Image (tube, rainbow, N blue to C red; front, side):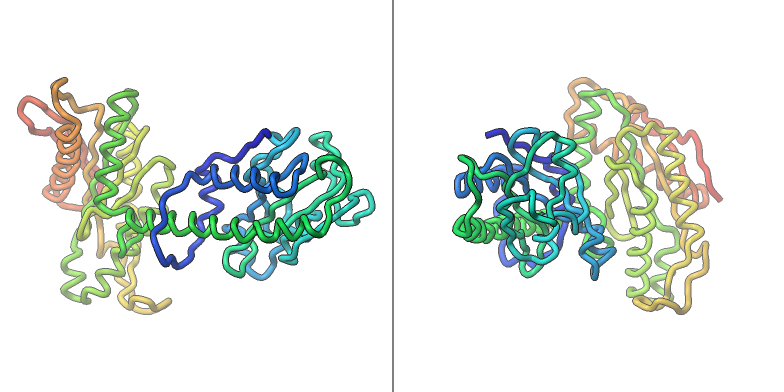
Length: 386
């Protein structure tokens, strides 16, 4: 039996859904779940081919009242030419699968040649002939999120109602398995996140930085670090209260999340009004440009004084600004015997001291630093900003 699935990271994005968990389940490799679903389905109802299709939650959010606007993604398939389907999309309202998804009811089609709902486009592309179909909805709670589809009963003949009933029973197992994945993903993600801003927390930052420093040592790739501290934040807290201060931190978090779009970057709240960004693949100049963009956006942003209100009094642009330090790992030189922990800590120290240099030079600017391993001091080589 030839099985194939989307890469785990792509399946994880399709399963990025929220559900309040009751317990913390064990972590399960997501692609293995779908391989098991199809393998057991084939045991229950032997078929020449089969697929699991999952809807796209991002489209679902955009069109909550029109399921037909969604798309179904082939996340796992088996059978002849199945590799051509992995990752392909189809409109959620098309074909027999679409009928199952849209109605939330199982569908049995004994003869597709006379079934008006049959969607033959994929057959034409893969040169596969679908003679009969049986499919059941996949649900999370009361919401249909996808379809399990089997094609062409082995041994010839048509699917029978008893086989459809078997698949419906198995669909309950699928739902439980997917709920476990959602629970596990949710808890693992919550453990990484800062409660206030939704950015990564300092614990995850330290773990990720160790990984990236180790990778940079091994591969020789670029790696840079940005330290950011808000200017005049204490005055906002003292004048307007801690609720406004918390709201300001949330909004700064949004600015960072929207500005730093590099897929491998890690944006974290380091503590208080300090933020840190790991930027793999960026040299010092590229990182300085990114830091300057962040500085300008913070400086030019207005922040709400009335948390939770859509309109109201705003802090004028420039009330909050950012002092930013930038360090490049490639500019640092270590003794070959230096351990990973020391390398990482010295990297953090350089970016942190560069940020304090930006403060000392008048705030609202970006400072770069170079590292002298012998004297354990750094030289400020450039600053930008107001």
